[in-house]
Length: 448
Image (tube, rainbow, N blue to C red; front, side):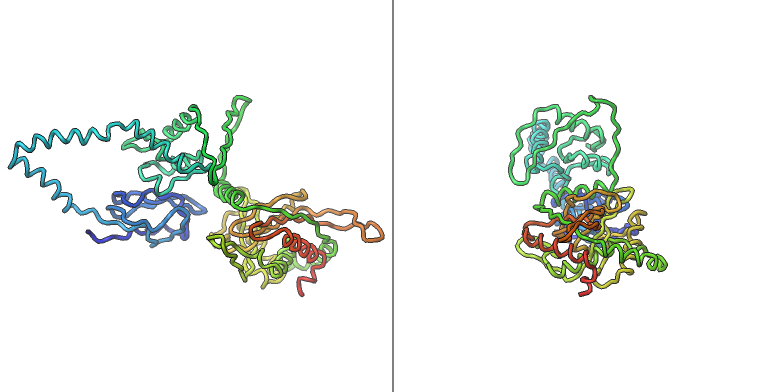
């Protein structure tokens, strides 16, 4: 057996720690040099990574969802050596010279072997149905077991992913069986025109949403989702399906807090920072996380243990022209109000400019989604897994509040806290929410 050769990620420029979105080969496949083996996607672009050597893949070292950089081992390949193949080809070549009679049966057997793969139409039907039976889920991305015989360009692969089509289900009409965009469209049209078999409602299978031809009701315009919305949409969908959400609602009296903020707003501006209410909310949240550490945690991979984190990194949802992004501000517990205000303003600007790095959006332990600058009251924020809780903040408003003797105008801030009910029960959720409300009503308690 030939020695195994490592296929590594080559120099891919400024990209590092990029996510694998497709594995284009499987163990046992024969590949050529410069054949694409994986597809990666960064926050800037998507690219296919080729193998620098050919051979037979003996072991895959990566999978969909893994992150790779230059030098990461993708697979172990046994180099294709011509010696063994030449010996096999030499034997039938020598036999006709010595035994011409045996050559005739050999010739007769050859058509039989060629006829065996002939009924491709029946096999194609069974192959096209197999992925649907194995993966009855709304989004079926190509993986290392399903993409092994699919040949398509990155744009066609992207188009197929958007439609939820497993490329091995599609027969390519291009050169050497290459799949075109028209092949994918034809496959979808054919699937829509045929009566669908009742899907097996097992596991996490979800009934698909009916497909509607909206053009029959009037003029339409189709706009492609931004890359950020496509990526975040899949993540949010997974979070909503996998986490049992419970949302607790409350209001915080921030009358004194707002007076304090207004008194120091000009001082902060003179130092080049904008002292927003979100800065105080972040500090109050950290105080509550220290009192209730299960909110600053994550479930273990086997869902049998709780990983408590002793650092406090707060993700802040930022509305950008291309979609929602959640940069993370590290070590909030160790920073003062003005320092946090400066860092919050700087990272929010970079998010809107599309200049965030991967590290800027990693390591969060709790997230805050603030709609205070827009309006509304309460909403249900989706937990940003692997975190177990998220705070939603809406626009504050002046309301009459009974103080025991009379109604008085107070500035009330709506709070919406979603938490993972596998980790946090209702009583703990209520206590956390009440404490946060108390902290914001008297921000001096944060110092205790």
